[in-house]
Amino acid sequence: AITRLWRKRETVRIERFIIETLQDCQADDLNALLRRVKLGLLIYKLKDNSRDGQEGSWTSPSSYFADAGARGARTELVDLLAVQRVADLNVHSRVVLLDALQQMPLSACPHRAELWVRNVILWTRGDELTELKTLCDLKGDIHSLHKLVYHDVSEPGIRREILKHIQREASVQSAHRLLQTRASRSRAARRGERKVLSDLDDTLLCSGGHYPAGIDRRWPRKAVYPGVLAFFRELDLGAAEAPDCLSFSPGQAGARLGNLVFLSARPHVFSDLAERSSYAKFTHLLQAKRLHTMPTLLTGDLKTGGEMMLRGDMEPLAQKKAQNFLEFQALYPEFDFV
Image 1 (cartoon, rainbow, N blue to C red):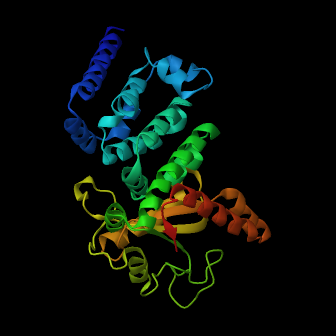
Image 2: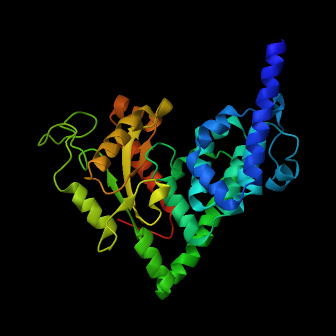
Image 3: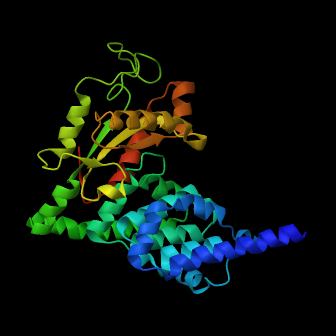
């Protein structure tokens, strides 16, 4: 009993030290710390008290933030970063914070975690919002912007607020682009003006004729089609002067952001099993300098996959792909799509 009491007091002491360090440091130091610390692991390790699972129903953002005191260490830490000091966070730090919340995941702190996500995104405007969205999709894992907004965020009102904010900020950028202002030209050089969407099977990778992936037997299974990676690069970069793209590395802040997206009918299953092999292939191609950027992957679901496997009905797969495209388009209204 004495040992447990000592460990509990020591844990509380360490938690207070971490929170007070992040609370008192300057903005540059805070961003440097978040760039180096494994924030997802830190948030996971810090626990709230037993009341965390007994919170009432969500009413409004103002009512939640007005009652933010006297909560556990995890809530206090994320409140500090996502609410109190969100203005001090640069774009990369905000992406790190959103990624940490997705790893937690959001369902571990129902209602409040979605408000944290909302607050971070609504505090980000203009070109910084476009950069934040793009970086969320360049991490090379399942935790994409699409998954965050359309799957992790379950409260329809919060999702609508996020999408309205994205549309509002994109309308300003579209006006600059229409007027061909200096800001729009600088923006195009930094992150491009189009998203390149492609299928995966029998488009990037040959299926070898293996059902249900595809029918092409001209190349070995999982072979990359000759010339397709260069084609994707030209569609994305065009005549851009900066040849190097950014996967997700804060140390390459001046690099060109890539805009490659794959639409796949492969269903998302528990623990990203279906996506893991695809991202491993993307990582291999990126490290071999054959792929110019880390792509985003939009997958199907078990329901549409089951319809195809059990009944041979391809229509639900096509409808799911179309839905994914329309949802993705709503996240990037300032871009063209090819």
